Amino acid sequence: MKIDPDARDYRSTRLICAKLYEGGLLACSSIVDSIKKRPFVARVPEFELNMKLIGKHAEKALQYHLTYAYIAAGLSFCAYLFNFISSTISALFVVSAIILICVKSMYMDKNIAINNFSKKSFNAGYNLSGVAAEHNVIETDLNIKQNVITFGGYYPFLGAGRRARNWNFSINSSKSSKKRDNDCVSDLPGKISTDELYTAVLNGINEKDLPSITQEYILFADGHEVDKSKKLLPNKVGEPIDNLDKDDLIQEGHSNIYNDWRTYFCLRYHDKLRSTLFSTFLRFSKVGESIFAECSFYILPPINENRFNIDRLALNDDFLIIKTGLVTLASVVVALIMISNGLSLAPIFILLILTLYPLFVVFRGRIREFSENKDLKKKIERGEPHNYGAISTFRELIASSNYKNYFSAQDIIMVQNSIEQAIVYSVADLLDSKGIDSSFLRKDMIAYVNQGIMMFGGTIEAEQVVGVGIASKTLNQIKDLPQKYLEERK
Image (cartoon, rainbow, N blue to C red; front, top):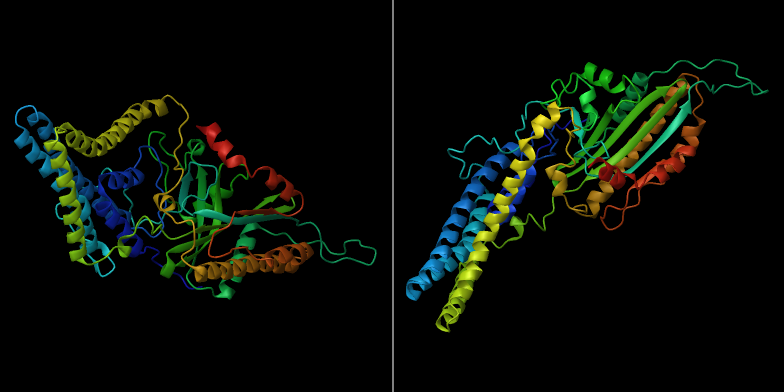
């Protein structure tokens, strides 16, 4: 198996850093709020993003935008005050505020992004000299591999994107594959363990020699219930752990099939050229003589380049200068006409709204956050319910709804079908070697796998939730549960 040791891609990181500067104060503040480290919430897995670099640029970009916002608000307020003293001085402040707002938003912000974060000129260290510790954003130790994920929503596979489909099956391991003419069992089937099942699947995947595939065990814990495990949450007024050694990981996740923390075997295919992640989550469990298998497939598309679009902006500085100059001149002329016609307060009030509203939104969010976090520790200490998991990751929030292109979709289909066949055939071969009946897998499951996945025009279609036999009815009944679950947990 070819192992990809580094799944981080600086292209996506670059596009996000560009948006921090090019998008203005509100866009920057929105990104900062999305990546902030929340108290008593577990670490989240951010696919391919260098969160430390993004965090540093988020802090510096926010300072940059706030500085100019204060200046613009100050000029607008001075224009209002001097309107009652000297209309000429007031008009000067109005003109100054208009020029500052237009030049910054239309030229300075975009010029910083284009000259430092475009495809042809990426300067990762721009403006980072003397940057303070990013105490207010996600702090991710890139040297520690995260193999424990605490989720806060309905589905456990936080950070994996959208569910493409899943299926499950159950096998009676006491049913022999060898029968006499009178249909009586001639030989007792051998015993089989979950470790043998995982090993067989891994060997089957290795034989496929699929490119850019990584494999690992990951424990997923329900953020509402993780406080029941001292191993996963040593301190209730702290955060759940994010790493365990392999033996503890497997033991803790398989100790009880009814626990709200379970270990899955994860296979990931990373399409670096198109910044797409395809994940397979497989779990085997045994109840008596029954072997239960569940398998889920998730797709995380590239980031939404309609929003993070620095590479689509014109690189010609003359164009930006001309456009900025024309818009600024037109705005100043309109404002002066209004002032000369006795409507001096109109442009002033417009400026006050434009400059104070973004500041209001930013500080309202900070006040709300402070209020929510103020008594959180005391509530946890009193034993009140608390969700230690995140609902989604930042990378999921900014993901596109579609594949990069048609070829990306076809590559995913190829990998998924190969993995599905490897899983089913590997388990079937193991069952045969143990003298356990595998006819169900070789007939029904293979027929289902060979149906493939339906994807049209590079669009991720609605998820397919498939069970075999009785399980399929149960799964169809719970399709609408996620939203109800979240509403009940609020």
